[in-house]
Length: 350
Image (cartoon, rainbow, N blue to C red):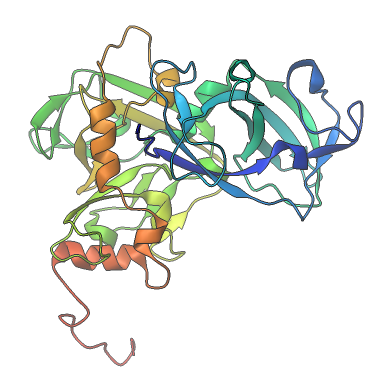
C-alpha cells in the first residue's frame, strides 16, 4: 500500500459553507473565475465545521504535486489536491483576509471535486466579507510560500567556519555548517515580503528557550530538530522534528501578528539540519507543492526518501499531548534534565 505521509496540516472549511449574502452571486458558495464577482459579500455561519486537511507529496503524476495525506480528517487519502485560487476579502472592520480555494479529487476520475477554504487569517463567523479579488495564477505559489520552512530577516545562521551571518546577507554558494554532512553549499535562496497574519504570522522563540542564543523567528511550518537526552514525550526515539507553530505557549514562544516581514528559504542538494541562533533547525524540504517557488532549471533529483525520513521523526500535537508547556519540556529533555533533577523553586517561584 502506498504511504501518503503528511507534510503540512491546515484548518479548512467546506466551500459550501461560505456563501454570498448580497451581490451577483447571492445564495451561492464562493467560486472562481467568472463566478467570483468583486463586490459580492460573503458570510460564514457559526454552524460551519472546521476540519484538519493533511497534505502529502503527490508525486510527478499530479500537476500540483499535492495529495490528501493518510492522516487527514477530510478527503480520501491519495486524492489529488489542486490549489485552485487565492481570494482576497475585506471585513467590515477593514481587516484583509486571504483564503485559498482548494479542490480535492478530479472529475475525470469520476470523482466529484470537493472544494475547501483554507483561510490564511482568522475567518470570523457571522461576519460579512467583501470579495476584492480572486486570482488563479498566483495561488500555487502562495500556498508554497506559507507551507515552506522560512527564516525571517535578522536571523543569524552558522557558517562552516563558525561565523554568525544574517540570513539576508547569504548568497548562493555560501557554505553553512550542517549537523550530519559538515559544510554544505547553498543551491538556492528564495525571498518574499508578505503580511504577517494568520497562517503566515511568524513564531518567535525567545532567547534562552530551547537553548537559543537570541530570539529566533521562523515560519509556523518550520521544524526544529531536538535531540532528547531522555524521551520526554514518549516518542520512542531521541531525534525529533517539531513544527514551530506547535510550540506556541503565549510566554516564551509567541505568534507575531501584524505588519509585513521578509522571509527567506534555503535549499541545499538535500534536506539538511543547519543552525540558527545556535540551535538546530531544518533547511527547506523540497516537496511537490513547494516546487512552485523554485526555478524550473533547479534539478535536485528525487527527494521523496528524504521527505519520508523527515516525516518519520516528526512529532505532532497528539505526541506532544495537552497540558505542560511543550517547549519547556523539550528544552529540559535536550539538556538531560527532568523535573526530579531541577532545583526546588525559590520563594518567588513557588
